[in-house]
Image (cartoon, rainbow, N blue to C red; front, top):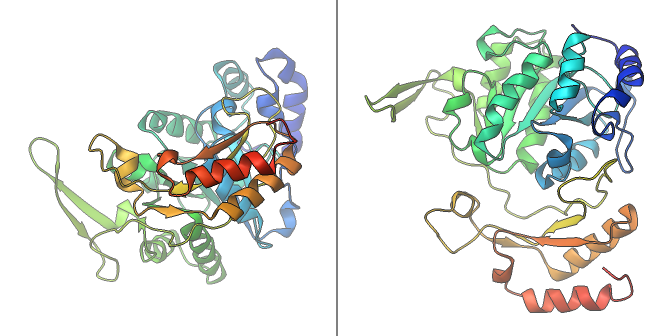
Amino acid sequence: MIKTPYEIELFLERNLLRVQKPGRYSGGELNTTPKHWEEIQTKVALVFPDIYDIGLPNLGLAILYQEINRREDALAERVYAPWQDMESFMRQNNIPAYSLETKHPLAAFDLIGFTLPYESLYTNTLNILDLAGIPLRSAERNENHPLIIAGGHACYNPEPMSAFIDAFVIGEGEEVMQEIIDVLQESKQENEDRKKLLLRLAKIWGVYVPSLYTISYHPDGTVQAINSLDPSIPPKINKRIVAKLPPPPTHFIVPSTNVVHNRVSVEIMRGCTRGCRFCHAGMINRPVRERPIQEIIQALDEALSCTGFEEIALLSLSSSDYTQILDLVNAVSNHFSDRHL
């Protein structure tokens, strides 16, 4: 099934006008970061397994895209799920899932990272793997296949997807993603097989490799015990925490078509102290970490200049709990009073 970027481009040229919202599939948006494919050591595909309209504004994907592309030895490109009309054309013409930046097939990447913020994306993930021509089950993949990882809020209970994902990131991804790339590069340099690579990954704080653990269950289906198969890996996975939030992304990709959140978004704090028992996000994102007002203003200033957006969002789980919320709102109002935001 693997096609060349030229063949994929040719398919797009012939079929894009036959589907809804061709801008979902063409790429070339403002602030994308295409790199010279042959010159880069490690190729990473960041997949949001939902349509472009929903996936492009995702802040987690934007953070990883910017952080990985800052490296000279790695590139990150984006992949979204096609809508039904486009998927039908792709399957009829044996066109695999591909990246928007360079139109390389998903299977040509070294590492594929799925963002899973909610459980309804599980089946979309399997569909994209199938569309890419990659075996669905981790046990069926070999050294010729990309490493498949997943992270996000829906991975805190990874077992429903454990047969299909090589490694899960439990927790926050900014730092651990860089460590995963480093380990992948080291393993390739030493010409290690897939099992040794997975063993290396399992030793990273916050990484869970399902194939290296055995799970036993109670009669009602709940987990009874989890045991590691190798004494060198942790018996329990602790979530990854970023002690200090890195600078927020500012070079937001400007979409080619209308999307659900068409604006600049800056995370002003992470975590929540409310402790509402129904709130998954509030419980797992602790501890609370706030960004300084000046850093937020600077990020907004740069992002607005880079994108041309006229709307901003100050994001967190509960922005009114930001300890300097009044000072922040006043600072934003004063600094951008002439921009008609």
